[in-house]
Image (tube, helix red, strand yellow):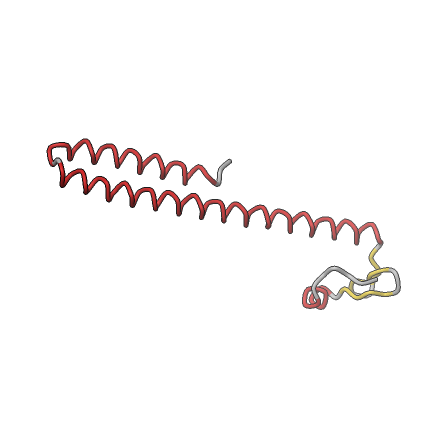
Length: 111
């Protein structure tokens, strides 16, 4: 019976196929244990895939937030050059928006 373990891992733990059963070292492994191990490996693989998806989602959200903050910074500079008396207000608006975006990025992986 072929195993689902990669060759290097199989060699490291001494797993080798014997007919329809597996052997670890010199002892045969019952089929129920083999199924349980395969199920455990599949569960961990699934968890890894979920974590990778979370990383990609966080990357996407962070990238969008940075582009938005860059755009706000450009607008802030433009409005300050056009109407210098509103500088404090423009900065407050841009800073508040940037902080809110940073909070969204921080909350992305926690849901």
